[in-house]
Length: 422
Picture 1 (cartoon, rainbow, N blue to C red):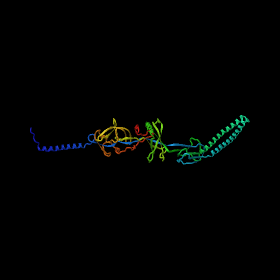
Picture 2 (spheres, one colour):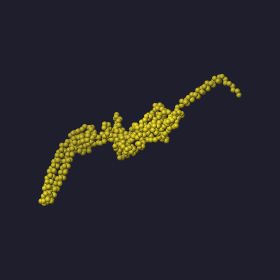
Picture 3 (cartoon, rainbow, N blue to C red):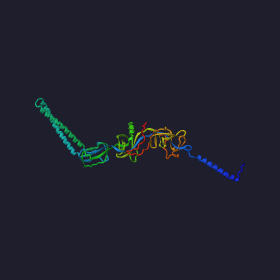
Picture 4 (cartoon, rainbow, N blue to C red):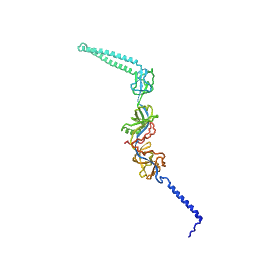
């Protein structure tokens, strides 16, 4: 069959339609070329960091209360009139310093009377001993009976006993006189004085507290930790003294350093906590009795492998990270996390020192596919937030992780500390 040629008008209509179809096809190819990289195409943009070996301390955080290392409540041991106070309230005193003075005249009279009785007994004893010597000679010559000599000897021995009693009475009177000067029992700072000059002070009165003296250099800080950390405390304390840092409230956040000196012999059954106590030199007296302060107890400072905590991903099989291999492809690597320390995660196994891992942009990473490393400031389409800079070498440097707040009965503790320090 012969085809009839198209009429000129139909040819003019077909050419624009063919051009429009070709233009639409080219536009579709351009859109496909501009399709974003990721699960459907090229390299996934990510932020990367290094696996590094750092010194990450094992710490326990708690809130502690400051207590004086020694406390003495001063009371009078004799009854008398207070005639002099030798210090001012809040003054620092040394052991043996005179604090109060009681009227000593009655006690001086008692001492003189006791000494006079002692002197009289001594004279009587001297006479009795002379008679014993004389009657001994007569008894040897059979000039006196044995009974007479024995009676005189017994009288002399009785006077010896009386002399001992008189000496004791005189010593007690002298001691009562010494008690008229009430001295500081220890080095420390005095508190509020509850008496005034001219008051009648009663001896050995349980309610007759004169003043309290606190020793605050050194000073103690008491705090509690959960009972599950008892084993770790025993383990690391057997290796040496445990260091404690205490930060008192105030504008100066510089911590005071001390050592753990006491661990209670029982766990508080009502709270499930173990009581601990640290001792601090406190030379500048920044720690004050009655304060509450933040306590950081360092159990150990091991050097461990660390990654940025943002690199950790969790799945049904556990935690993992994406390791960037030399050919710029991603490898899914299961890891065992020992503990978290602020922005860092301590990894027990799964990665090696110096390996590069993905810290941001994991949502677009496919194992075995290539990745493109971006800087932290370049959007990667992944999780929000910037990854910590871990590219610089920090081997041997201690990390300073931030610790959450805690309460005395439930202190915040760095989790999972079962692993021993190397």
